[in-house]
Image 1 (cartoon, rainbow, N blue to C red):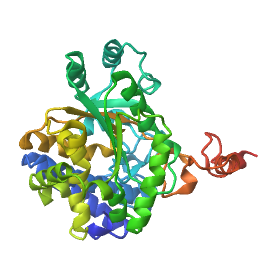
Image 2 (spheres, rainbow, N blue to C red):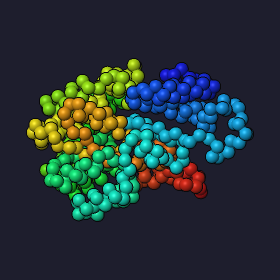
Image 3 (spheres, one colour):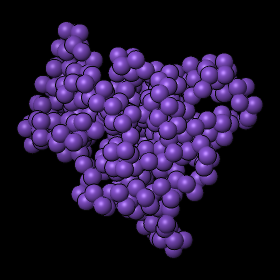
Image 4 (cartoon, rainbow, N blue to C red):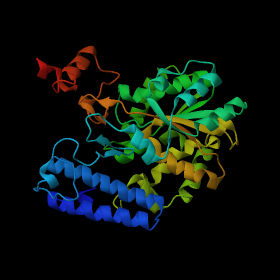
Length: 389
């Protein structure tokens, strides 16, 4: 983002941040559309992170690069609150403690999973809450109480989660939503659809279509191994299913008609140089939220609510979906959000398939895991175990 703003040197970055900060204030004061404000805030956050990377300290409004901070105190606690950057493709924070999830709940406008909700889930299911709930790994939700209302009134719902197959094997961080979704399927006894977004990875990564599809097949094997109910689970590749399901594609088109380019730019940060494939993709990830996208499972029923367990970086897709749903006559999907599985190097970012040294993959041997932990893992003392010896 910084380069797109034309900011190269630390001083130029400093001036860009000041100008963008004023823009955010102006938009808020003028009661601009939420998407436009969110986009401006996202650019401001990105600029501040670029500034920190370039200068080695947080941006201070009255302290241009090379100057002493007012009062001469640049010690701990005197900088601005550290900013977290979270979107569907990037998770990054300047805090060694990791993402501040309470602030993320406020920024995204979701609700905290509190003890009252956990107790209600236990009462509705008759089962002890999953350890991911008890330990706060799933920490945020949208409309979970509404799902429980429906369940208690014998109304059906279904689960939807997914995987973007960017590598031959999944890593342990990818398992978090699937382990929890398996438990949800067991205790609520409901259908589950799992979307493999091989089309997305073809659009975003340097992959051929055959490679993206091949990764989807391999990743599906890892997902199947989690033990889902074979009679209530549908795993599909976008590259396969889009061409064979009229119900699915019709919903994609309906969603596309009701979301403008300005909206997706505001939500996802797309630019004029992004391909039209990327710009239109959010509608494809949104479509499984609606039951008639799967006529072989639900027929033409449009009133079956969807519950989506996912990491919170996927929430922008479903904020868009929830905005569109009532305009096309469908119920809003509910969500359960998980925290991120930190990279081996520390909590400042998440495990990523794009960086093999940040992750432990499900196909790694015991020797490979030991080597990664010894060489790359943040131990809390020195940066690596080798550094402590």
